[in-house]
Every structure is written in structure tokens, then in C-alpha cells.
Image (cartoon, rainbow, N blue to C red; front, top):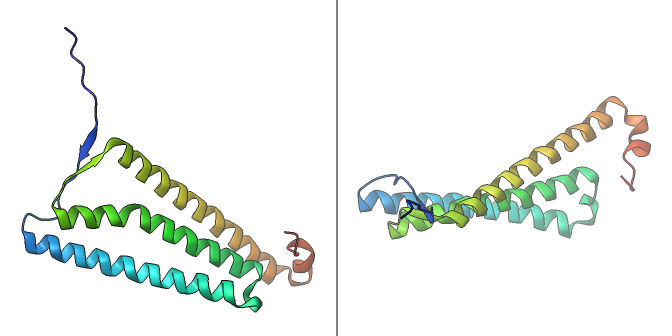
Length: 138
């Protein structure tokens, strides 16, 4: 008989053992989550609705807001679920998906920040060449 086992879920450490602190963590996470959703949603709405904001810098801000929504929606709902229902487990596939999407959003955000810094560099250091280097096609 072989000794084999497979991992189907991970156990998470709880923030606290008391129910009142679980509720406090839930409401705290909910407040942070709703503030992030509201802020990113307002940025996305303002940039999408105003035609004057369709410039490269605001395009990047729009995408950063979308990535912020993605990264916070990857981790915070599970933390709220664990705090509210006093569960301490996450499935193996759920953990892998959470890590993958969070790393993807973080890496893409760093990539966009690099592009934004180059955009500002060209706008400040080479203002006469800005139109040719970062024109409408770029």
C-alpha cells in the first residue's frame, strides 16, 4: 500500500478568535473595498464620458483604475467571506487563481506605470517631439 496524499485546500490563519473582531474586520474590509470600487469607478466614468480626457495620459489612468479594480476584487472578497463566515480554508485552485490574477494585475500595473513615466519624460524633456514620438498612433 502506497502512502500518497493530495492537497485540496489550504488553511488560513484567522485575524482574531473573537466574533466581534471578525465582524470588525468584515466591516473594515467592506469599507475599504467599497471606497476602492467607488474611486476607481468614478475615474473610469469621468474618463470614459468626457471626450477631452481621451489623451494618452488619461488612457493610462483609465487602465490603471481597471487594474486596481481587478487586483482588489481578487483578494478582498475572499477575506471578507472568511471574516464573516468564520471559515479558514481556501481551495487549492482558488488559491492558485487568486495568486495568478493578483500577480498579473500587479505586473501589468508596473508595466503601465513604466509607460506612463516614459510619456511624462517625453512631455517634459522633449516637448517639441512629443507629437511625433507619442502621436495618435502610439
